[in-house]
Length: 439
Image (tube, rainbow, N blue to C red):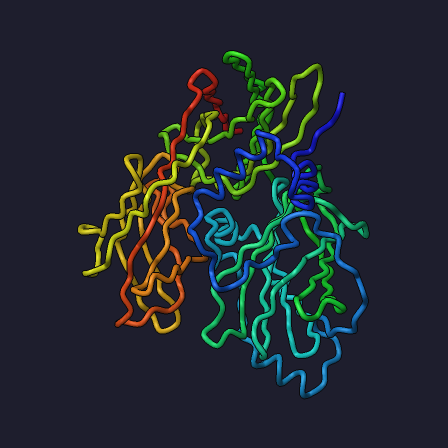
């Protein structure tokens, strides 16, 4: 019996490109890449080393000023110039974290460290057993620096588990930026623990920003349905559902022949509204040409806990097509949106465009069988591709979103562009509805 971790299996193929990717991994990567626009944003993707293997940076000590310790008059003057941001979570496009902040479930930290004029502040933290979230503000007078890594140390022990980062738009002068770091622990952490964070920035790799604070777990409820369904040579079992005000966790077990693609799983409430997937992680074992796979998924909950959830297994394919585009020749509204078609299976309804001095904000509704996976971008008259950042879910029930693009002048034309049709084939025989009894 060989234990398999999908994350670890991917790593050697990334490092040694001539190898052939396993089908179940290659399919997932192909589907994701196919949905992306042809060019990347001019701004580099951040936290490239944080997404996995988060404890690989050298930890070379550098003196830094932390919290309310001794600071010189010059440093005190510098700190006065830093804008105070009470909650990064309220700025994030994560309804779960916004709910946690609104319900006072987060722990305020407001701890700062300054090195060479760059100040990092930890604003708040949240942990519910499924995910550990940290709000970070960076203030850098010489321009925002890329965060290379945020290494967690729990109760004095360097820790390995998947993490990711999402940052919002920087300030007008590009000297203040906000980021949410999300960790998805692969094992149970204590209900209360000491967390040390080591932050490394590009161009300052030989120095580290260090923070220490206490984390307390928010209460959650666990349901263990152990409901199983089989279709042909594929068997799926709902092992566990974890419910908190911020996250719904789902643990699925899938048994299937070796070489066959593991299906993805979606979660719906009793009204048929799909929940947003924010994390997916898998591992498993090989035995007698069969795979015994475990998938751990995290979803952003709705405003109130549903009475039941329905788990649907599916395969997703993205068919590349010619670009579909629409030129903005009027200001859209909710009653008269601008329609951007994405093949026969979906479309975007653009309801508002805000051309602000420092950014362009687009409001839209996604109408399709994969509203969270639908992607569009902007082309200007020269054909330059402009991608958005900072996706925010405004209304999960209606699949309404807000995205942020760089500043566009009033004279600059806008063409909304998309490419590809998303096909989702649900395996109806594996659909399972699980009641969530309130205690």
